[in-house]
Length: 538
Image (tube, rainbow, N blue to C red):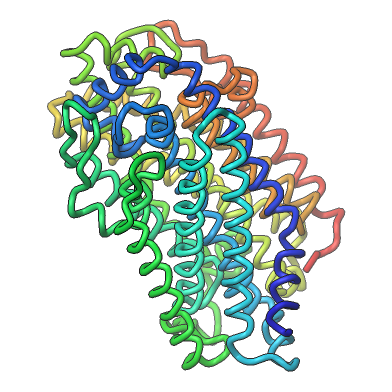
């Protein structure tokens, strides 16, 4: 009885977020199915597209493992991994929100004071997360079927992705048990998603593809990534029972570990204990800016490493694509179609792949602003505001840290890209001019999201985290996959990422950089003006 009440309460609390995610999955699945069927309507077109990708393994990184030219298999090859990552991210966020985050806020302590066992909250978290994943899977199934995809394959795809979401939800719970804060648990969960994606990309790149059937034989590495198992399962073909069993085993194993840990863990404790700080702050922490910089030191180190990795990845992708396009005119035509511009392939890819940098910089800035929200919830902001620190000064300090976080990503991305380009034989003048210019051009789009996060924090503090993350994820989806899914141009251009010009082209129009910078500054100024006029909201 208690478990049912807790599950219903968790689902009711997140009903709007589940509805928004489900609607997004449904629309994305519908548009993907329709656009894929329209763009690749004939068997020969799908075969040509698959042969083009197979001849250049670099393109498999952002897609998946080919499973033949049949319509359903081709659709899942194009978009399956995108949906798998979406389900995994949702699973981590939901689990941490109803796990470690509720412990931090004190809600779990109130529940334990009632007639519930010490594992009731954990069980409710996992069951509610599973129900939410099933709802998302139903949305995916409906979108695929209405878009013309095979019903049986769509059902298998929904099942595979739901299992992925449930397994990563359990991983999110485990991260919350290991780490002492919700923020650290989310970061660790996302890191595991990224690691799984990386292993999947390597496995797909080295997999052997039959030149006749255009079906890939999964590499041994694929069995070490839950995301790869959705491809190995082959939902629109002959379903691989072993991959399905492996997904079930992984999910059951992680769930069993979470119950084992919960049975021995003290309430509020973590397997990795939080290091106690100084009893008294040093003189360097006497200003709100220095305090905010100190509190987010770990996040900045994470963003530094992220920037290096993203910059190196974008540069390697651009160079591999450039080399492949020189030998195959069809690849060059595909790149120009994907980018939506005409010009030298090298310049097109250099500017286009740096979109990853803009997305990473936006996420870094948003994380900094949302940390300020968590400080407000925990009561720390009230303590700081009790000193001679004005609300405007405190808010300005948080915005400054967010801007510095984005700049760190921009700077380290350039370093990572420069290392790759120099190792490829590029000159220093090219690295300093073209590469640096392409990286810096990403800052205005990231600034729009950071400014919007500041404004939402000042206007709607309770709803700011969910709203800004939803907007960022939608923006990333439109920017990365809008063209592949043949989404309408007016819809894709609703994200600021789509307005970053390819500054490496000789005739690049830089006007969008100016108006995006103006919008970012306007959002930030409005946040600074509005924040002192509202009360501290727990």
